[in-house]
Image (tube, rainbow, N blue to C red; front, side, top):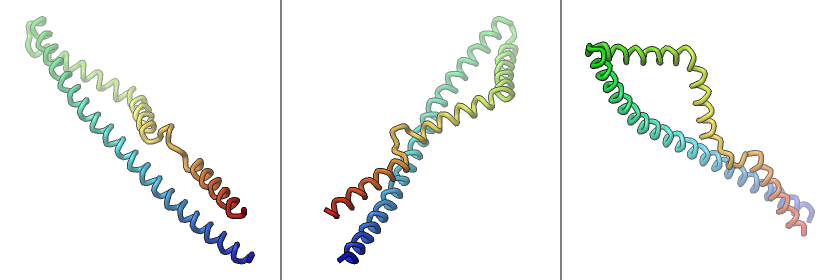
Length: 141
């Protein structure tokens, strides 16, 4: 009699362990899918909005260069000034902006991958252990 209950408990433990590993694997598959989709959507948004921003910046730069050329009475001077401005901005970004850009990208993508509403594997394991203990207590009764 006791041996049968022990065998039954071992089968229950085995079944619960299989359920746990299956649900954990499914959880990580879903989390990977969610993270990859968020990354893909973020990349598409970056490409679309970045493209439009570059077009706006291009036309504004051409307009400013032509306007400066009219003011300075030299058509190429306006383009040289605008090009020099972008050269200085690039130089400052290379010298001082690398860390800032890396930090902001790391923070943004960390927020994409790790949501506050995700349940942690530790919490999931505690929940499964509690359910298992309740199952064993119900079987004893």
